[in-house]
Image 1 (cartoon, rainbow, N blue to C red):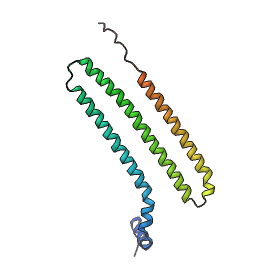
Image 2: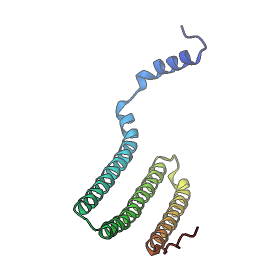
Image 3: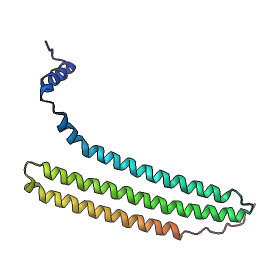
Image 4: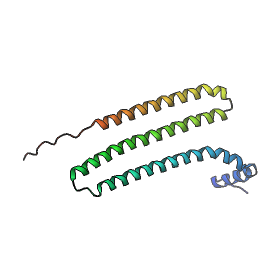
Length: 160
């Protein structure tokens, strides 16, 4: 019935495996990935709502202003708030990433045929991830403080 083509080989494999299919086991295997995707979607939605709120607030603040200097001051405040929000969002995304990495390592250790043999590697992977997260947090803090300390320079007069 089956010939030796890739499609037919897949069809044969599926037809032989169908009686062994366990939907509950598949659901259990897919659940962590679904949870991770939901966590990312929730984070993105929360961050998008905060950004939209900040933009709306800036627009409302500028609406009735006639003085250009006041408008520039509001834009400067908005830019500073935007940088702070960006740093906060990046920190939240980093924390979620590393949290999910730790959970994945825990799941692999739990499912490993010899969890005690994998335990040392899991410990080292988690320690490396924690160290990387700490380094990223430090870099973000340093970058945010450097960005906050930047002040505009006076323009030199144009010469022709």
